Structure formats: C-alpha cells, structure tokens
Length: 291
Image (tube, rainbow, N blue to C red; front, side, top):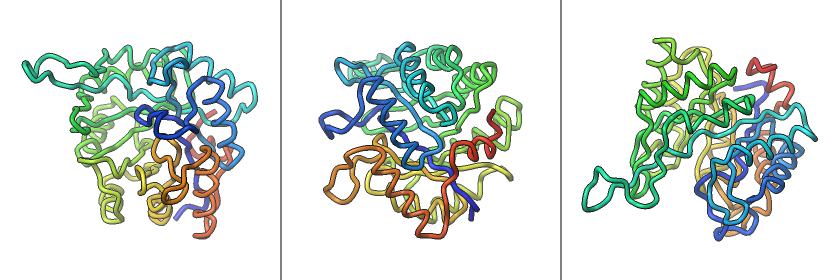
C-alpha cells in the first residue's frame, strides 16, 4: 500500500450529459472553478475535457482548453493539469454500408486529437489504448494512430497517462514501451465498469496490476456505482485513485453530487478511513517526475 496516494478529479468528461445533472460544469469558467474547488478538497490532479458553452456538447476547441488552463493557472500554479486526448476516436457504422460512418461518428486524424497538447503543453495528457465496443458504437485507437499521438505528446514534453480498458490495451502499451514509442515504466490508469471492458472487481484489478511493468505508477477508477468501491480497492492494492462527474454523478444512491469537490471529499475520507493520506500537488509532481 502507498504511504501517500494522489487523487485525480475528472470534472466533466465527454459522455455525461447536462440533462443528467444540473451540476455538470460546461463553460470554461465553470470547469476551471470545479477544478480549483476539487484541488481545495484534496485533488492533486485534474483531468479535463471541454464543452461547447452554448450547447454543452463535447468540444475539441483549442481556445476553450487554453481558456480553462489559464484560469486554473491564474489561481493555482501547482495543481497537475491533465488534458484528454480521447475525443475523436468513436465510429458508428452505417447500416446500409458499414464502411461509411453514420451520424454521431467522431473519428479524427490522430494529429488533430493532440493538437491542443502540442500547443498548450499541459503537465499530463491521457492516451487511450482501447479499441472496443462501446454501447452500439466502436471506439478505435489503432496501433498506428496511438504511435502518432504518442510522438506528438513526447515532442511536447508532456507525460502520457496510459488509459487501459482491457488486458489487450495493456499488452499493446507494453509493446510500445519495448519498441521505444513510449517511455517506461509509465503512468497507467485502469478503467473499470465500462461495459465490454474491465469489470469493477478486486480480481480484475489484481489481474491488471499483475500485467503492469515493474515500477509502474498506476491508478484505477470505477464508472457509476463502482466509483467509490474502486477507490478502496485501488488503494488497498497500492494504486492511486480517481473520481469526478465524468465517471459518476451520484454522491450516494439516488443523491446527486452537487459538485466534483463533494466526490473528492468522500474519496478522501475513504482513503483516510483505510489508514492512508492524499498527496498534495507538490508531492504528486515529485512522485511523477514533473517540474
């Protein structure tokens, strides 16, 4: 188990919808405010998506990312900023011709998915390794596209967070470390509770952890009702933790979380009740080798 644990807060995400909760941050000001409040509650890092301020729909607008980051940095220079590169990988096949994308597909060239990383240079960015069924859609992150994104991330001097949805993703990442595309032993996040991916169970986490390279730094999180049980399971297995409205909108059964900070505060209590403590951003930066 860790002497100290760092907590990442994923404040808005790509799939949570404004109609599901009135507390989801949408505008750059709201997203930045939620990040800062999460830091006050105990988060050492924030994982950030942006949204169209007018519609609440997911966005990849570089200027929205820049706005959020500048607002955070104006008030907190130490909080670790982790920007997503996940959007742009979803494919919905047309029924008449499965080779043709149906409405709702978001596939983008890999260079475009990391353009904001190249320009803004956050501390960390996610790098998804998964190609998998996701509801009625398919998420596609081919080895070639992952290599392109990894190259841009490395050239920007940004630490990639390897998001792992199933064991095949982990084996791909290990191959990319072996051939020098990625630097090992790496920063890893195990995603559990997504249908057709890793289940949110102690057995699954133990198995996934056993596949990680020696010396890897890893976190895990659970989707929906699995969020807080996975906080405890990850801590017990020596991992770090993540919560946030991207992953789960409820504080308790049937009770909407009014903010990301409430989710962070509950996760902090779980870690402390188990005998642990959370790192502050400065300590997490040292653990990750960040400036």
